[in-house]
Amino acid sequence: MTNTVKSLPPAALKGSMRDFRIIDGNNIISRVEKFFAWQDTRRGSGLWPFSRATEGGPGAVCSARDDRGIAMRGVNFASQDYLSLSSHPSIIETAKRVIDETGVHSAGSPALVGNTSHSVALERKIADFLGMEEVTLFPTGWAAGFGVIKGLVRSADHIVMDNLAHACLQEGAAAATKNLYRFRHLDLEHCRHWLHTIRAEDTTNAIMVVTEGLFSMDSDTPDIGAMQDLCHEYNATLVVDVAHDLGALGPNGRGHIGAQDMIGKVDLVMGSFSKTFGSNGGFVASKTRAVKEYLKFYSAPQTFSNALSPVQAAIVLRAFEIVDSAEGEALRGALMRNVLDLRQKLVDAGLEVYGEPSAIVAVKMGSEGLARVVSRQIAETGLLANLVEFPAVGKGAARFRLQVMAGHSRQNIDDAVRILRQAYDEANVLLEAENAQPLDVVA
Image (cartoon, rainbow, N blue to C red; front, side, top):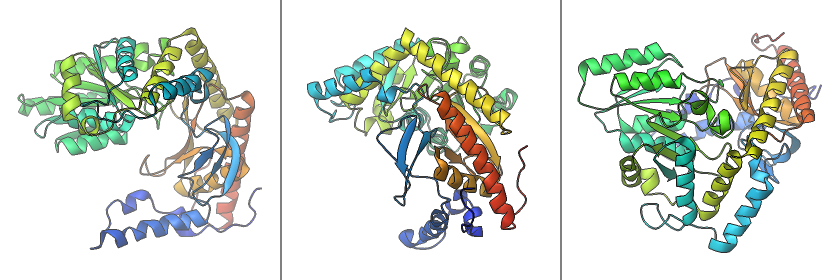
C-alpha cells in the first residue's frame, strides 16, 4: 500500500465547490477566504488534484507538478490531445515556419485587422469540412460556446438546453435571457414538451435549442437528426457543440454529425480546437454569411477579443489537413483501439465505465470522499487522471475522466488500469480504517 498513515481530515472529504458559489459578507476580497480555507485543507492532505502543470508537454507519459510544487511522473490520461497532434512533426514544423514568416501575434480583433491569411484559409477549410457555408473563428472554444448564444439570443427569446450542456453554453444562456428551459439529458420528448409549451404562448420571439455531439462527462450522444426535425417543427434553431467528437470520431473525422448523416444539415455547429486540433480556439459554422457577419459585430467574445494568432490558425489548419487524410484515418483507428482496450481492461478489473466508446473513458467512483483519496493515491503511484466531482456531475457520482490518445501504448493502458484499481482498493482500506461513512462498492 502506498500510504499506511496519512491524515484524512473530515473537512477534506466533505463539501463541494458549489458550497462557495454564493458566499456572504460585505467585503468581496475577505469573503473568498472561506473557499480558500476549505481548498487548502484538501491541498494539505494531498486531496486537491487540480491546477497541475505539465513539464515537457502533454505526452502519453509526462512529468507534472501540483500547485504545491510537488513533482510526479507517470502515464498521462489527463490531457486532451486525442490524436496526439500536439507533438506531431508536421504541426511543429508548421508552427516554426509561420513564426518565421509572420511573427506570433495577430494584433487585432477579427472585426478590425486581426484576421490573417491563415485564419481566412482555416475558416474556409472548416466550412468545407462540415458542409456549411461560413465559419466564424473565436479565440477559445469557451468563447465560441458562450458567444454563439449571447451573440444571437435576445432577452425576449427562449433557450431550450440539454441539462448536461457544457458550462460555456450554460453561462451564455444565462447571460442572454431569463427564458431558459433545461430538458432531461438526451430526452427528446422532454425537449418537445418545452418547445410546445413555449410556442403555445409565444410565436413572436425566437427559440434556440442547444445540445452536444458528444457529452464529455457521460460519453453519450443525442439523436441529432431527430432534434433538428423537432426544431424545424417548432421554428427553433439548433446549435450542436462538437468539441469532443469532431476530428477524433466518425466517418472521415466528422464526429457524430457525420455518423448520423447530418453534415450540412444542422442549423449551427460550434466547436473547439483544443481537444483534437493541437491549439486553442473555437468556431461557429453557419449556413449563411449573415450569421457570420452578425456574430463578428454582436458577439462580444469575437468582437472585443484578439483574433487567433497566425501560429494558432496555421496549426489548426494543418491539423484539419491531417484529420482529413489517410493518416488521420489511421490515427482515429489507433485511438479507437486504445479506447476499446482501456474500457475492456477496466471492466475486467472490476471497475465500471460510463457511456459509449470515445476518447473520454469515465470511470465510476461514487462518493466524493472515496474519489478524492483515490486521486491522491494515483498521483503518488504514477497516473495523471482528472477527478470530476459534484457539481460538475451529480452528488455521489464522482468519477475519473480518462482521456485517451492515439499515442498511448498498450503498456500505458495496462499501467493506468493497474494503478487505478490498486488506488481504489487502498482508498477503501484507508477510509474504513478512519471510520468513514459507508462507501460505494465495486466488485
